[in-house]
Length: 268
Image 1 (tube, rainbow, N blue to C red):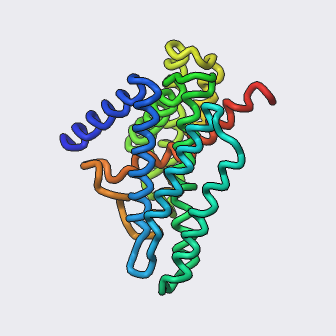
Image 2: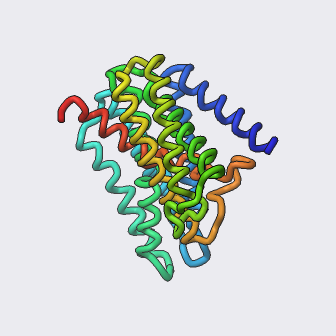
């Protein structure tokens, strides 16, 4: 428990520092974090019968992230997507010359990495520039709502959880815990609305609910991945917490969902 608390404290401190020191530190930290998550994803999936093109996959993921940083600063042109084509071709060519039992499985998992791990961080990154200039309120608020949801789901689930939410993939999760997560997240959203004025209280509550629902599905999806691979944790980088994917699985679904809501909330 002590190791877990120390790890959580220092990691949270580094994350908060990345927000408050401006757009450059925010960009660099989440570029580094997305790369670390992608490498962890590849290590998790690679076996003796499954050889991923990790170098090209990492290059593909980081290129996607750099395109996202350009897009939010309005220096991105659609034609820039062509830069992804030779990287994807290389991944295919690698399998043509590699003696592998499952070439298309290798290709699929290599390309899935940037889609599953890096793209959500791109949407998360874009939240900071949704108003036109850098502001930490929306991405930081999203993280706080996810943490509130996780805390409420755990606290209520441990105390009152009786009805399994999705036992096939996550035996410990309960409907009571899910309700507790929604309640804690809504409470956190109400508190945030008093300090973070980028959204009105109603929108913060909607974002809080989206974080709970989408975050839960993100958590369940990563549990499904680990269960299919027969592993408990995605990695061991964070002592007492497992791997990076274990910490950010909720964000992978919540960030795109929240971004889409905020992008279209004034249109519909």
